[in-house]
Image (cartoon, rainbow, N blue to C red; front, top):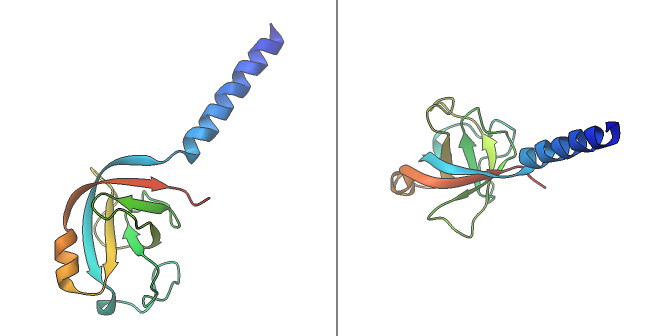
Length: 119
């Protein structure tokens, strides 16, 4: 009986660990910010001029998380920055670093987004 109880606890623990690594996907507020209009570095110190696809995200999304955004398939963004748009309630938000205002305006809306921890 004790052995089966320990096995059950181990299975629950494994399930919890797997859930922590699983992506979260759902509706997310999307905006864009022009790289040249703010600081020369992101919150985590990345130079804003990087060609790497980066985003700012609400505080409920861990820095370094990887983000896939509906409509921008084929690009995985890294959360490198924070912003002023909120804490993620009622929806998480992502602010995509872009080069022009027209790109920023074109992104604005709610899209299906998946967040995952880097591997």
